[in-house]
Image 1 (tube, rainbow, N blue to C red):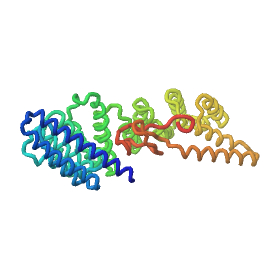
Image 2: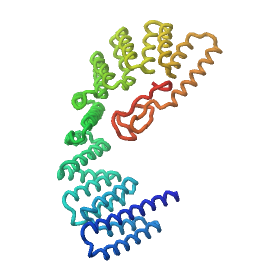
Image 3: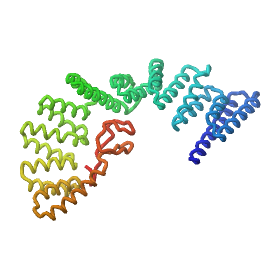
Image 4: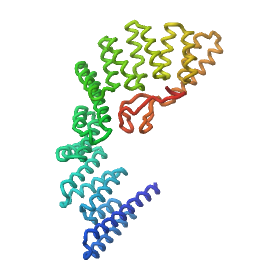
Length: 403
């Protein structure tokens, strides 16, 4: 903790030194050479006052001294903004707010500079969790600004509405963004908007409003034709309506869109084929998917169907053949389970049961899903990563201990 304090003090001292030098340099560059002695003396006075406050662990007073000592001009505006941003990044949001509010109290800023200061203040409020204040400022900037400031304000509004689960507002804010200014972000926005529609469909499903569910899912697929989540939800709706053939059409789209989502639909697909009494169709579908999208879950599901249709021995042979090419803990566990049912010697059966339990516990300790962006690990699929807040970045883990 002591070293943290020293580091924090050193950082502020460094910032003060840098900004004092910047202010001195800009003062000279502005052409005020004849009045140089007095400003320099005044700057030195404020500088040493600030350092004294820092050394006495009074950073708030030091910041007050600094923001009074450096005049806000077009040349020093970026310096003030940088100081406020540095504080926000360090989590010292109250101090960042004071710096940016101080900027807005100065009468010599032009309209564009006022908008820039408002944008940074709104970001401070967002960081502090003051969503109402942040939203109000961002909305004002959307109405009053053009170009990058308007784009950034809309981006932050989407973030606020997502956090507040105001999905309709999030869709509208994203639709207002000029996607061409964001390069590849056009696809990212489409993915986001599709998920917002899926969230609305989930809410409609809870209300029992099936018409609204389908309306939102259609919108989701308009935004993003590769939305696996939309097709999964649509397949669920068809199953509820006992339209198992139509449900299968939706589920068959999923691996083409996002192969990693296959484990999410396997049980549903098997139920649809069961209801249609089409075991040949089920085996054909699973065998095709196992070849194109191999995974432990896919192998286990296929083996279970082979065993139920052709017998345990055929199922074991099928499993062993694929385990040689793609070994996994889940696969070995499935094999042990199948073999145990055919063993009569109790001691051997107990040993196999012990081994199966050990392998099963190893399997349970492994994270099933991992975010490709931030490394977040979990046992369940999240469409939105809880840690980095990115959509569709969580994937099933692969290898011997996983898929």
